[in-house]
Length: 294
Image 1 (cartoon, one colour):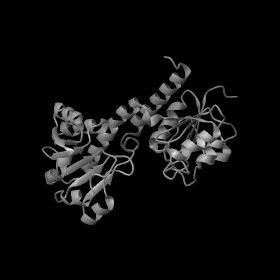
Image 2: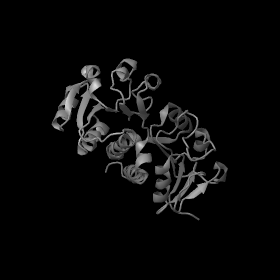
Image 3: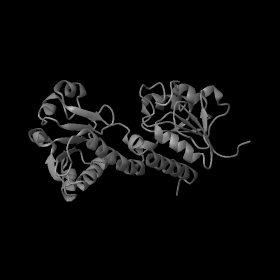
Image 4: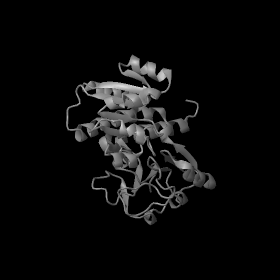
């Protein structure tokens, strides 16, 4: 009989496979949605079907974002669907549900069952630490997609939050001349203090012809047809914003502007690091629940 904590990891990319292996070093872990994952899950048990599970988990871990359609957990390594309702029906009333960007559908389903749902994507420590592999992943994309060196290139970063700040550091580190376009005076002041050229967002369109590379971190439309048409020939726009992004991708395709909507970069560019960050965040959430006043 198992006396260890029991985790069910349902869906997710390579970082969740690694997370299963990490948690399984000190707990019982079952992983659903990884039937086609080519790597090893360590001591975690790989489930081919949810029907294999005969007991309720202490903690259900869903990916980030938890679902693309509001009905099933995102599971790129499985042809089997993982219905959210079926996953939640496996839980006890005291099962903790952890999800990244859960969405209204999952929130309603958990509320209906009286389950505690926590959004680990809202944790500041996860957001800050995830910005590092996101920025480095953006650098990797730029190196692969652009047919020239980055040293000396004019690069535009839109927004100046966590990811944008790390992008400035990473791209400046390879010799890029970074301009940061932001709306607030505070963000522009931070950009200038960090060594970037500050650019008020309302003045951005008139400056776009300068930039061969654009990194967008703003999750609402900034680059419509008009803005895209102002970019120089051969420009690359890497959109790092969460869905739906800040780019009119259909217009970009029609105009021949090369774009990449780089979603979930930590799981693609550095899955081991991203899994370590997730594991630390989950441990912190559990510790806070045990000692709420700590």
